[in-house]
Amino acid sequence: EKYARLIREAREKGKGVIVATGHIGNWEVLAAYTAAHFPLSVVARRLYFEPFDKLVVGTRKKLGMELIYQQDGVRPIIKALRENRVIGILVDQDIKGVAGDFVDFFGRKALTPNVHAALALSTGAPILATAIVRTGDDPGRFKILVEGPVEIEQTGDKTANRLALTEKWSKLFEDFI
Image (cartoon, rainbow, N blue to C red):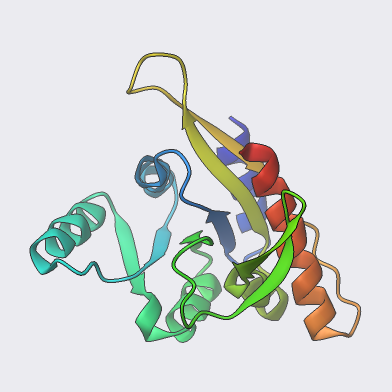
């Protein structure tokens, strides 16, 4: 299938892969599928209700996912990319205190976290824009939507490069919606 093929091809470069999605469809199923086939580290935040957080974290670990908390910063993410792991990140997470850029989204400027773009530009890791949606009436059947790798431009202007990459990802994600 296309998703697995694109991850395999991207990992051949040895710089890891950033799988950037958002809160659309069942991203936990996407992560479980990915972890079953590739070494996966997911970037997450701690949940406010501790018993539920323990349940979710325990389930993710049983499924083979490594957890990297947002609060731990980018160093663990960079380490995982150097280990050629797949990084799963929900780009549209709560953006309070998270760096972002205003990019076009459905014809309006929307503040969009840019950590995936900044990481790709600094490490050379390719970004795959992804989403997962249910197919038909069967709640257990899904289709993975994937595009990429998102083209990375290195113009010498880090801010412009990050903005352009964030906007390219956002456009692909808009098309999924």
